[in-house]
Every structure is written in structure tokens, then in C-alpha cells.
Image 1: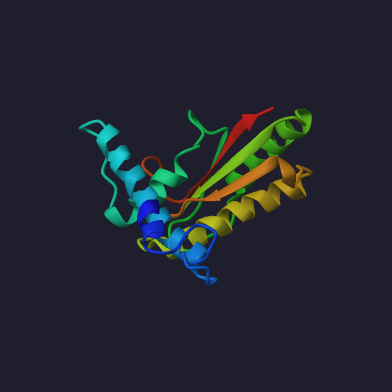
Image 2: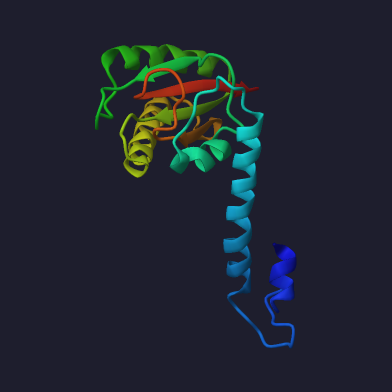
Amino acid sequence: MIWGLIRGGVDVRGTKSFGQPRAAAPAAFASAFIPALVAMMCLAEAAAAPANAQRVPPGQASFLVLAQADMPVGEPAVRVLFEAGEGDALSPEAQGDLLQFAAHLQANPALRMQLLAYAGLHEHGPARRLSLTRALTVRAFLIDQGVGSARMNVRALGNTFLDGPTDRVDIFQVGQ
């Protein structure tokens, strides 16, 4: 693909082969190369999947490959459940769990967390927005309890869950 762009008269520096500047070349390069790279990653993922693996709708496949590349493994330290639909309020039970976890984090200042948020809406865009809102709600609660914001990474994964409850935020400890 890169060879085709160079042979077609556009090189990676953004000029035509006969020396005239071409400002759109980097964008043309990216728009041609990145989708091909994602498609190759999806094909490799599909080929490596076991025969009994759960299938994902085609429109979400490339997002899943990129989103799950560095996902934590194992059980989350805390799982915060939300009401199905548009709700992003923390229940009293979730607040209690987060208070206990915040105390644990304050006692261990070297711990870092990754918040993975999901939402069970059918459309991917609104599901990602809702999952981001939920993750930021959990993050704000922990910050209010004295946990440093630099210790938390937020990932809004929308409706790309493969297991577990659909409307949740999972908090993983990712290192010290």
C-alpha cells in the first residue's frame, strides 16, 4: 500500500514526485494505511480465535481489537453496577464499596487503577458516551475521597462487553 502511494506520485513527505507541494499527502497516507492496518489486525484476531469463541458484530470488531489489546486480566478489585438505561448515579451500595476501596488506596499510595466502563445501549456511540459518564462519576467520587486523579486511567468501552453485567464500571489495580 505504501508503495502504491509512492508510485502514484505522492511520497511520505507530502510532495509530488515532480516537486510541487501537496498538503493532503499525510492525510491521504493515514486514511489509506490505518484502515488497512486495522483490517489486518481483525483478520489476525479472527484467525487466532478458538472455534467456540464468542462472535462480535462486524461494526465493533476493529474497536474491540484495539480496545482489548492492553486490558487487565482477572477479577476487578471493585465492580460498580448501574441501573440499566441512561442512569449514571451511584447507588448507596456502590458508594459504600467505593469508600472502602478509597481507604485501601489511601493506605497504599503506590497503587494505580484502571476504570473500565460499559453501558448496555444498542448503539455504540451513545453507549460509549454513557460509559464515559459513568467512569467519570466513579473517578470523581474517588477524587472526592482523596485519591489522586493521576492514579486512575479511564476507558469508556461502551457496549463492547463480552461477559458480566452490561451496565458497570470495573476497577482494576494495575500496578504499584
